[in-house]
Amino acid sequence: MAKKNFSNKEAIKYGWGIMKANFWFFVGIIIVAGFIVGIPSNIADNLNKPDPCLLGFVFNIIAGIARVIISIGLIKIALILLNKEKPKFKELFNFKGSFWRFVGASILYGLIVVAGFILLIVPGIYWAIKYQWFGYCIVDQKLGPVQALKKSAQMTDTVKWQLLGFGFVMTGINILGFLCLFIGLFATIPTTLLATAFVYRKLSGQTETAPATAPAVQDEKPV
Image (cartoon, rainbow, N blue to C red):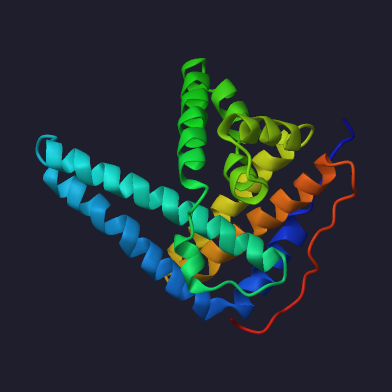
């Protein structure tokens, strides 16, 4: 398989430009997503103190379901913007057709990564990178759990070290946003989300027989 490639700088520039053009849209998305996931999580934490209880377990399940729905919605929003279209707020809750496949793939991914960490950590990091695009493959390409993991493995072939570096850069950007009194996260979270989607599309195109077509970096009118 031919060596793949992508540019961190190009991805960040794209993410930053689209974030600026849609800043207030993303502020609303982040606030709503934070409440939807955070409320059941906090209730579960409080109920499980000092000892775990059944009701706390139920709220943990609710929080997990909320995370899956929001994850699918964020991926859809990022992909819509990659296609130079304007997403609607309701896309955050548009999980129809992807939910159970996403859950199944998440469980498989988690088991693989945990098994890798048990095997002296390094395999866990390797497999976490190798299969990281399963969610995008499910939402974008409508693949099943196993097929999505296999597709991710193909996409990450020859670029795992580059993806590891990209992950550190994305984490660093969000840490900077956190240090700016949390307010910076309203800019860094969508920037890294869009940069990640940009890299996904780049690698997905390079994995196919047709040449990759990355979205142009340009400012757009706010949604």
